[in-house]
Length: 316
View (tube, rainbow, N blue to C red):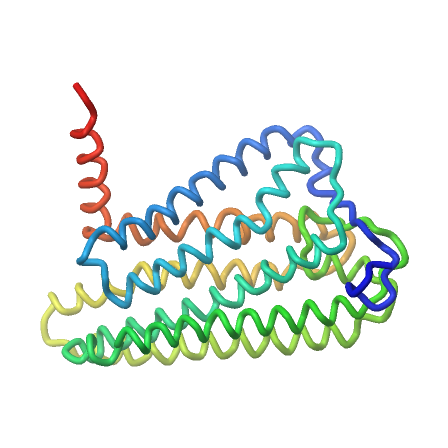
């Protein structure tokens, strides 16, 4: 029994199988995931630093982007270090508390990022549809409240789902056919009826996904209507460049979630579940800084200045 953690749990540790069905790929996978994780940390931390050092980027858009980068770093760091560990060591265990803690933070960061992208869509709506009132409408106080709201909602949803998992019994097998404490893997290890937890998770998932996508859809409908009415091609190009990076990030994020939902939950599909989760947890957090920096002149100019000043400060 784990005191205070679970209802009738006799499991003190779980064993993560990881990609054990691919023994010949353990070393290559380790190198690939390590490289991607390194790029993720450097890229997202770079976005945060660039935003702080360039006064031009002290705008609501980059305020939200810096929080998106923070969430990407955090979410990737919830799963990737443990994944790297089980790829190169024989000990693939994780404590019951560690597993539930990993799930809580992973779930919280995913839901928070979902609504952060929705908030960024609203920001783009205000920027395109009301450019003259943008600075007033997106005040620092409102931006802080929107960000606080996304973190609060993500934390509350994750806490609710985690609590439902803690009420289940884990008296049977302690093996999780996954590289992390993902919801379906934990449910599969439960020995009591998970119906309530499943219904709760489904309800929270539908509400969160539907409401965030609805806000994004409504925002971009108004943006498209405004863009169509623009008389000049210059305004059209500016509006497109303003929204293109965000639309790309939304498509990748929600597309990967849809892929994860579409994978059938059967024993024969566990490898697909793990691959889809790896794409979501490891690859997607790396892409966002690339998407936003490659298309943004201010970001690229700031990076060049930072590297230029570092090179000039080196003694010859």
